Image 1 (cartoon, rainbow, N blue to C red):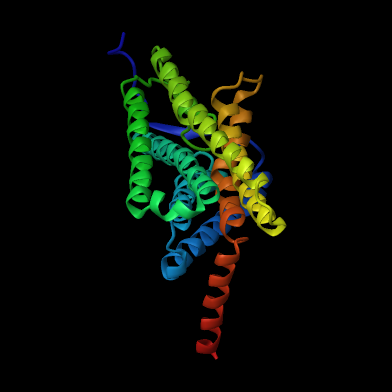
Image 2: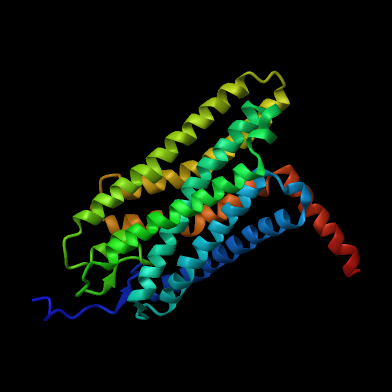
Length: 312
């Protein structure tokens, strides 16, 4: 029976399944979002690299968050834009698996980076006098390397379990990129092991980190309430509320996607939720974390002032 099966060598991404006119409108909107995401995160990376005053643990973590956001967008959006103009263009099996692997790697990395950043803010607010000792550069580099390594290995496990499955048709993925759940639906074999591993990974990479973030911010909130200075309290609340907005968007959409009961139209729900990963989250991160920060604004202002005289 297996010998008579024709193995799938390429997939068709169905995308949003709307009319050609709507596709053109979406192409324009998504192209703008994509360009803004690359530009804003690129500016953040450039400012952090060029200004020694931003060479601190907080901005070190923010630079890696910007890298993840750029990688998110570059991994999923170009293929989606191509499909909006040419819906019938296929993606190879190897390309699809690679896209799945990269997306999982970046998603897991961002989960862990958000935990690291919440810990960094907890130390900065709760133990300001010992901050430089606790968050030494050796510790910061170790936390980032651990985040990327764990994300890479976990994504490798998922992809290894996918590659062992036979795909003998159909070859149409009802999504705008090769998302792991959508790909598994096309496998003509038992996928229960894959589902169990995905659920276990969600507990490890979503529920666990979210609990750690909540613990960190509970400690931060208690420390803020003890601040006597009204200005200091407002500044601390501003920083924490911004971080919690990102955490809520990221973890909330991921938990609804992979752990909540499915609706009658799970594919359409997935597409809408994954827009947060492809567009909204990478686009909002630099706005919430960096571009509204006084230090980053000062660095940007100084960079623009340097440019102006030279141009004149």
